[in-house]
Image (cartoon, rainbow, N blue to C red; front, side, top):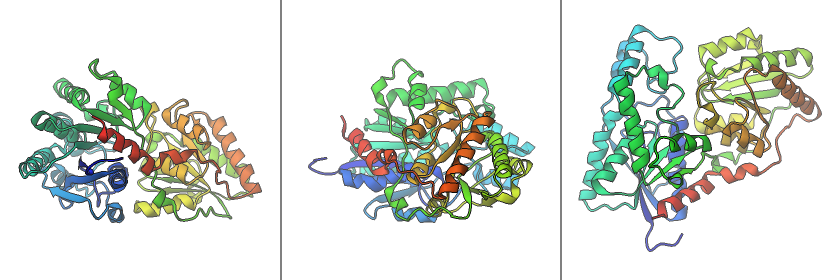
Length: 438
């Protein structure tokens, strides 16, 4: 990209190191690679001591280029009150949702979050960001574009206001759906709250200069929100993997067929049939040591499913680890397990980790809907089809095929290179073109 000077991008993202988890990866990797394409970034994020982060990962700070300016602001959010009244120290995922058992206090907070904090409980951050941007512009700062990353979708309201006040070119990067997110009904919105939330969503989609989404199904979902949204405005820019994270060699175990899952998983992912198939496979082929490993947050309900399947002795549970360690677990596995939650609109769910799974070059056991975006991607890259939630026979057949292959050679690593087009560098190059477009 040729330019008289680098393009200047203001990145507004709530999640930034030391925040960990999936939410931080996209913005972080964009900012890491943008300098290669003539774009210099200023990152505007929340003060690390005040941010409500579900998990921390200090190792990610190493990915922030030294020349990138990071500005942190104050915030005002209800999570301290939540932790004090519930006795929980961990910030809930998804804004008080996804908890299978909730107390009356938790139910009250869920109702309050769904009806008083629209679109979400981190909206108290917005006024601090708007003031900081006003100060930067008043001091003579200039930006060629602003990128707002969400969730939290309240961040998109910052972009909306900046577009109205200053006419700045605005890219709304939306990692997940908004009013169609799978847990939306759990928030118990009253009709006025649902109307307001849908109105905010529609305004963002209509007024942003470009909307970036991670899957084709999410594009279709947003496209139908308003007749005023031009199809070319919404661009699919998937998540990906960073080549630098995969420099260590793949070393699958030689003494066991090890199936690994990384990240968050609960009973809503409905892998019980796969667990049953795994138990049957272990019974049929006792000469092949079958092992399961879950790295990250695992719900009590899913742990119970493992026990019910008779696989507790073969299963290892490892708590959340830094991202670089998580990649190491992938590379030290035989097969990788991925599951799409069994919820509405799940055909468009394309978890960021699927690209790291592909970069690890392992066969992938994916439990989820056939014909989904995830299924299409995995088959394109030769990693295996998605296995429908109730198709026990297909799961058992897939496992038996893997067992037969393992008996011939315990290294099942794949030879294909179709995944390389999803490198973070290649995807950032696409983003740079969007930033430069007028």
